[in-house]
Length: 229
Image (cartoon, rainbow, N blue to C red; front, side, top):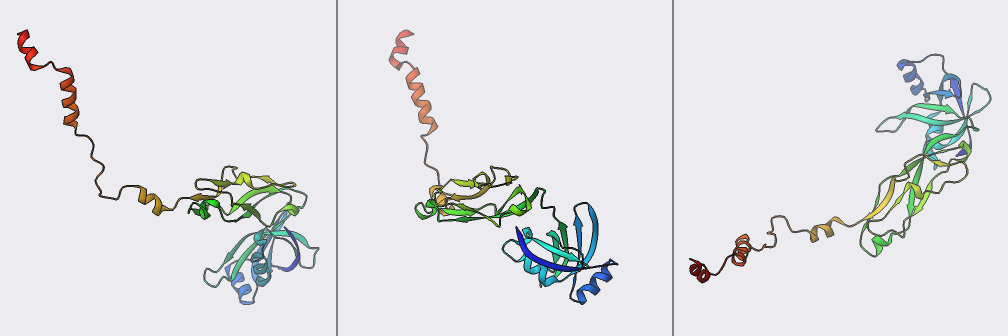
């Protein structure tokens, strides 16, 4: 989704770990701008501006403008980034130039809404299996999110990627059979129906009785056998 945001980037003439440390000490984050057949440019950006975009509702799918060294702004997207695992400080960012006339493939978040009947009436549990789907579309038509209604789901039923409505230039790339969410029975209920561990199974009819019956049916009475002799 395109936003009216422009950030400035300073070109970097040198690269390497020492240069990256120097930039971070100065409050900048090293990065690269690349794509659309042009040369890649090493840059330094304001980490607060990039972090704000990543934490927005559109996240890394946000299309915004970057202006390098006073040149004309170019539309870009964040394709990769590195951050400190503890403090979350941005360490590096890759910005890809976007051709607004060309289709692109992106992952879009999927949210579910409603309380399933299988939960409300049958006492089941709603499980979220997948939180995004991959689509192909024009850059200006990238949606912020998809929403699926799960209120009609009963135990054993699910909503799949095929249920995500595609509009405009959008085409589903993910498998249509990919499960987004389903309602399952609680495991405790399943355990109650099964025999407890160690409990004896219902006694079957003794095998000897079955054999005795067959022998009685096939054998002649004892008196008749003596007469034949």
